[in-house]
Image: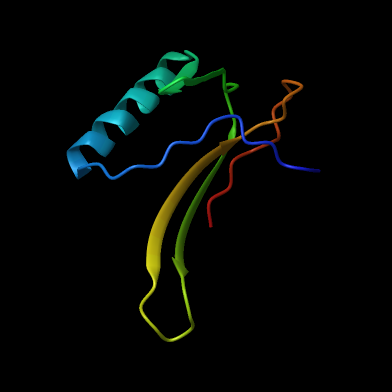
Amino acid sequence: MPEETLFKSENVQSRGEIAAYLRTVADNLEAGESITLTAGDQTVTMDPPSSPTFEVKAEREGPAGKPGELSIEFELEWDEDGSDGGPLEIE
């Protein structure tokens, strides 16, 4: 299935700024509210279901054996038709 990017924002922020943003997302999830992302003239509102799939990844990009770029990615996934995908499993 082809992927369509609905919103993208990437910029340098302090740890505190990132934590505040993640807290807002967490608060909205906990309250069952939608999440609106806005940057410049871009905006998208998404309404995650009560039990989306939660994926966490830690990655290193770059040549093998050499310093590269590290990242931590947090992703929520769900079927657009509204059906819950099943139980969450973290290994």
